[in-house]
Length: 144
Image (cartoon, rainbow, N blue to C red; front, side, top):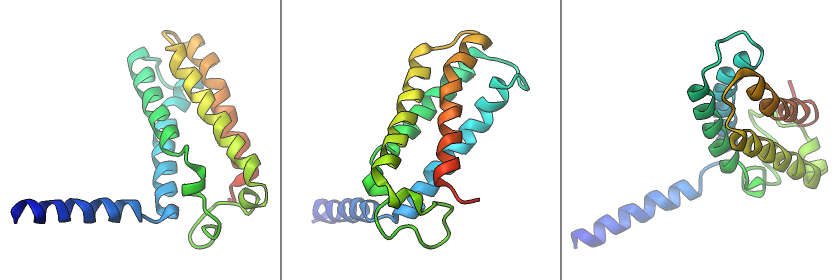
């Protein structure tokens, strides 16, 4: 009986997690992404000291974050453009273009991780496309 109760509890937790609000999920993802970018951005701009271990750890976290946002259909379903969101209607107006932008970002992050930069110049070269992808996506798909 205890085993059944534990299994039922585990299932309810799993179902509750699966039914999470896409708006909340993507906002949490973007918040985490922003926190990581606040580490990497100043380093790339030369406003903070370069530390290869810290940079590569942050890049790995950014890759995990990008992978968590890979299921664009689940995080950006039709009808999730209302409420407390900065998401622009352009996302749903041309959803395939948005998906392509998201994939471009994920590829840029993966390439930066693969580069495993060991000095500032290598980091700046690897990170440039990541920052550029963030900027272009925000221009097209984010309301201020």
